[in-house]
Length: 277
Ligand code: NAP
Image (cartoon, rainbow, N blue to C red):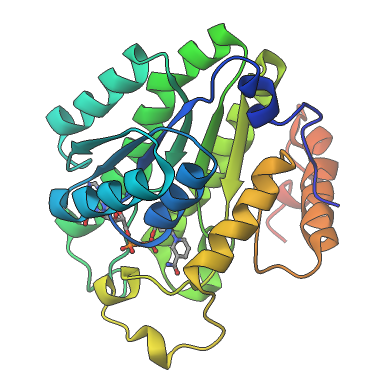
């Protein structure tokens, strides 16, 4: 079994008081929109963040009508520091927000030498810097409250340089490491941090990399992905990999990594580096 935080589900804990609002980035379509739908059904008020205001308004109107929850929209390009700061301020100041879904992200096509420096920098700004700044904005407040959750959407690509999406994968490796580290720091303070690692999922992201998703194999439907991610969320799983059949493989990888930890602290270089032979 994957490692699970041994605390009661947030929904149960918070229902005794009030159901926390959920701020979801990248909520205009794809995985973020599916999260919005699921949390609205669970009775959470929402704050939706993305660039496309019209799409968020249409989604918000439908979800409000179907579920009666209150939904705010923040139109923001999270690669623009001033617009990102608006969302950070909301996360710092709005005590009703108890869950952050750090989902906004994108990918770009081509190999590293084909990608422009500006494009890879923008990718890093959205997939890592924005996600980090938003987590940093909300975490102190959640820790002080002793409850809440941060969900970070990574990718299996972050585990697999072999998949050939180097910069995208590097941003997702950052998301996984950040989530694991934050969990170690914040779990003792009552804050749950989940990393969700989807594989190929049917969303518009594939148009952005110049691929036709219908030509890809083993594509997961977005509803299946988010429902599985929420099973992991409800179990307080630290790392949720919906397509991975054998959770024991993940546990074995973590055990192998942890077995190396004592071996990193040595006064002298390893024997193999003591001669050129
Ligand atoms: P998507 O359908 O392209 O949706 C991306 C969302 O992010 C949209 O709501 C988009 O809204 C928003 N966004 C993009 N650029 C933004 C910016 N500069 N500022 C603010 N919002 C921005 O992609 P998705 O597949 O749902 O991706 C969601 C997350 O899942 C990403 O982190 C992605 O890396 C991850 N993921 C996806 C897959 C997959 O196969 N689909 C696999 C692994 C991981 P606007 O355009 O309105 O701003």
